[in-house]
Length: 123
Image (cartoon, rainbow, N blue to C red):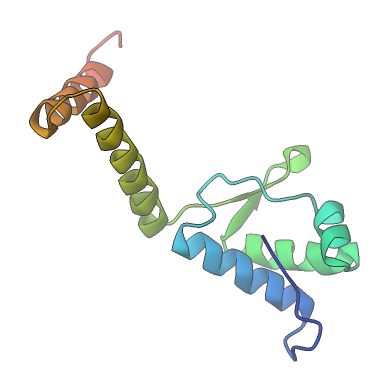
């Protein structure tokens, strides 16, 4: 998932920040993705835990991730990453309903019906 180039002039904590930010922005890391704990990622990358902690702290300050206490750190979403995730889910849905022999027009109607049902009182 992440890697460190020890020969790069960019410090390791900056490399971690850049990779997490780029992967979030590309949709590779979806909103809500649970990041590895600091100590585990540090061990995997051969870094001091403080290096990873610094990257996480700066990413949190920038709004790229959020920390939920003992539950860990999670990637935050962007409008673009949410759109990409929704488009991916829509593609999976279409593939599934086509496999069931349902045409696209009926598939869209089913989505509309489901959306209406979730807005109805008592739903």
